[in-house]
Image (cartoon, rainbow, N blue to C red; front, side, top):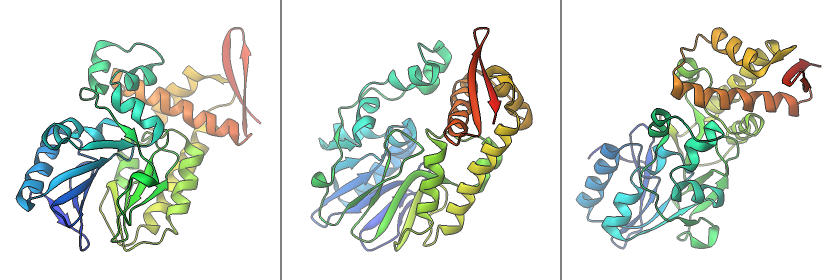
Length: 291
């Protein structure tokens, strides 16, 4: 029904680009875990909710990225439900210019502003344990975004958002977006041992066993670190960035440039933290050196 898949007694998910969750509270209301990546997926999700005769009691956003919050305004307007998100994420959900400005470190071009532009901001309250319905749990998932969380339903189903992605994402994009590479590796390794009946990542197939995929994520991120480190001796950021794009055969446009300059800087930061790389100002330029 509109791609809504039942994965446990009261837990469902909408199979779409950014899988969204639904939990039936048993009293004619439901909880949403994210709200879809596109107007169509949000509309399909609402049609499924209507077909079941539910009303949305609350929305739990795992984080602020646009492909997880597109339906927020739709469901708030239809059902008057509250929207919750982790602390820092609430600001980005409410203020739709923060995200493009963040990537560009200033005002972006009009084209890229439109690319990153999210729906009209919606007021979000802070997501904490005491606002959750009985039996729900939160799990911090540092690495992909500012303070993203995973959410477990009372059916022992984990919604893991963007903490892990499938192998094809690494093959296609080579440098998928992460906020902290070292934390992302730690999170992937932690999730490889997470106990649960079923797991729903946002951008890959749901499964009752994600351990191999978690290990693949940790390895792919570590491999990217090693390859960027090998390019980074005695070079400026611009030189490292250009060499990285050549190595990974990335065709740039202004939108990719915004995301990828950010992403490469995050990898360099991880290497600085590892103390295998250092940086110094030389003739007004920031130059990186291997240790």
